[in-house]
Image 1: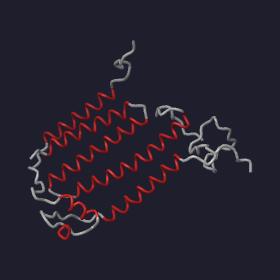
Image 2: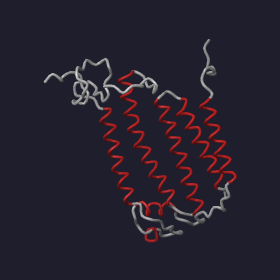
Image 3: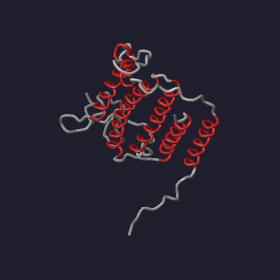
Image 4: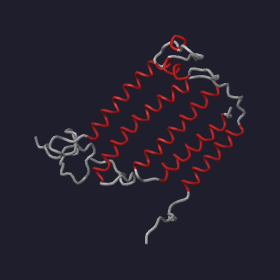
Length: 131
Length: 100
């Protein structure tokens, strides 16, 4: 019969390091003297204010009921994140895509490919370096 | 109102669990999950200090961090896929050399 067993042959140091780090953090945080949280107030229109901040709008123009919380504009950051997301999407597709023949494009080919050249100018596909 | 220190304590716990995962796990997918834990610990901090100072910037920042985390996971999963194709395994300690 097999059943889950505790792994006892692994090193204890990562666990000790993580717990030690937590102890240091906890000691720092619990001895820190922070004033009482100021909070946002019970009738604060948080979601609408966040939306206004993300698109660089004035929160008081958006919020009809509740208290508007004014913030700085994050429109430029929003656009940069937009570009980063598109780049990541394209990067993920580039890494994962397959060719029409069903062969995978290997970005980092291993030693078992029969490439004679060490430079993969063709995106790492096998063969075709002779020309 | 809950003192900010308790949020920081929660954040530290999540961060340390993430660090432990990064240090011990060899499966690339669990590795990615641990990195996500570390990122989310930072998010908890941002939201906690947003409440502390009554300032919205922390919450907006944490939204952007989530978007960045999504981008990171997209690229990370692509890399895991390539790792699996090349080494037939998702063990991160297998890929110790950089080679063509």
